[in-house]
Length: 140
Image 1 (cartoon, rainbow, N blue to C red):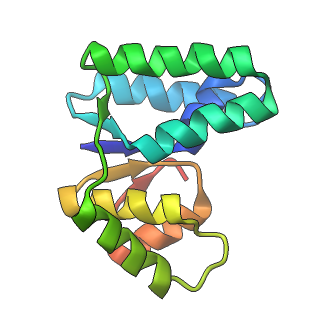
Image 2: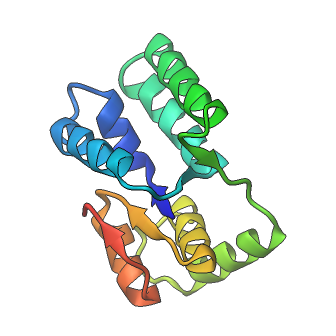
């Protein structure tokens, strides 16, 4: 399983983003693999919120609809949070010293740890967190 971080999806959706081409290449590679590609509701929320703020609301709505369609078609899996995931995310958050690692990053790491998944992200802080938790993070 691959868990895709918002940094990849935001870069993919925003032509003006400095990570646009890297994101396009990463998504192309992801789609050629025969693995489950997943996001959480936190990632979905973060992506559409950032796109709305950085570009505009119509772009956020179009990309959100694209993600929803990808979920409906089984290309992308939306994994809901649950009590166990939230508890693990909170433990990771409380034991992480870096101020740059947010709760959403900790939830992504908790999901990857529980599912033995790989994280796809351009976030260096998330990569360091993955290293600490023995989770593979590609892209950063």
